[in-house]
Length: 405
Image (cartoon, rainbow, N blue to C red):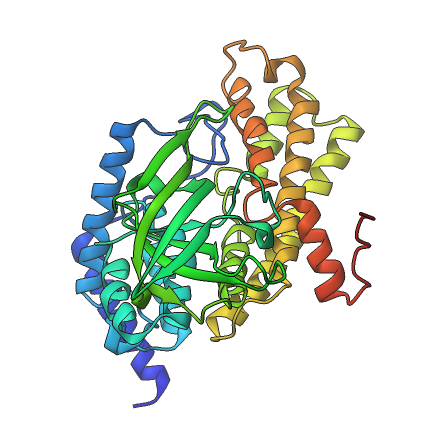
């Protein structure tokens, strides 16, 4: 059977599944003053809300996976259907028309950790985790950043010392999203401190509930605690859970980082914002005729449109089976720059209403976005690191001069 009829049959199957398990979304349009006015980079939830969301997400992911729609492009030996990427794209386009539980808790797990396991894990580890992760039974987090190393991933100090068929891990990670409810973590460690910075690194999968693992929430200036610091004290990890070769963790890390920048640059954090909201805000406060405001509106619209088209090309490359490359740093950098432009725009429109709660719908609520944007300029690599990557690895410019010792 050719792909055309096969795709049609698949989409008919998907339509039946969605129609039987979810409610169709009604037509909706933005109306100023109606509904929630919350506009944030990250959803700040109470522990109770978080637990409820995870339970619903897991329930839906299991139903979806068991029906054959949980990992459409994945290898059949790990629970996938091994179908082309346009089948997955078609399913998601259909699913967007239905109201289903949020699968946000699986973003890092399936967007960053699972692809790294598939690319670098041994068969036994793939069999142990990939199906359960795509079914929602297990959740993974990313353990890269450290307090001292900052954005210099190669400067990490968490140590892994070999002990027979095991490794003993000791150190600290920071800014770890979802650590509080993750089952496993992808952690990069230093195994040969005598080698150059980018050498001597090794990647592992670690049990987040193993003895010696301590997770502490980090309170942000938005009021939420979306990130954590994680401490490791002589945590034992079997050698089978090593990803890639010993001292070759930098190569493994790049797989994760490029997928991370693809996910972040692809629009994470922009979903609660739309140009319609900004146009209506300007009209509501009577500044839609102000030439400077109109210029800012046009500038934001153009930037968001251009970055959207750029992301579409990058996502098409990934869906075609190609690995995301250094150009994903462009998408991540564009996202944070666009966010900064949005912050400036709403500041110009709202003025003091942004920082003093006047009770106006859609005004003071934007403060959460303003406080959250600085975190996005760090997540997935700082703006400065992204510029260096774009300059050196995309444009081929000379490397940044190193400071004199």
